[in-house]
Length: 111
Image (cartoon, rainbow, N blue to C red; front, side, top):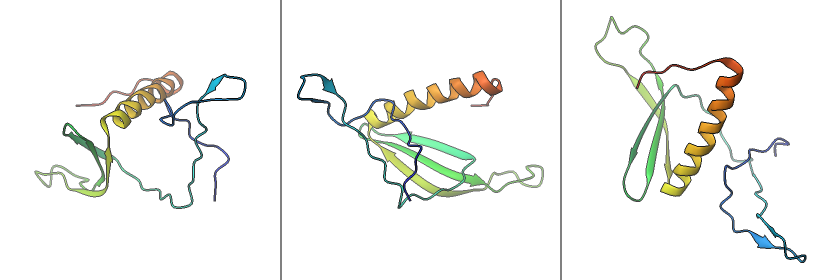
């Protein structure tokens, strides 16, 4: 089922094309969500090489650290991005987080 509210890319990668009037317009991005799945994650980790960025998503299963000396995480997804896609994700996610904090207050996280 296609969504009526489509996500907007930070900087569309498709090449711009000049119309009949000579004005350059970015290519339209068509989002197809028929195969999309939704999963919850409260843990993320990232590693990178020269060619790619790997994002690992999972769920923390440890509820009481006093009982254990380790945190158990069920990894559910790995997303591999090119460096350019990672840079676009960084930009758009930064903008969305700034908007979120403006509306709801600052998020303080440990590194």
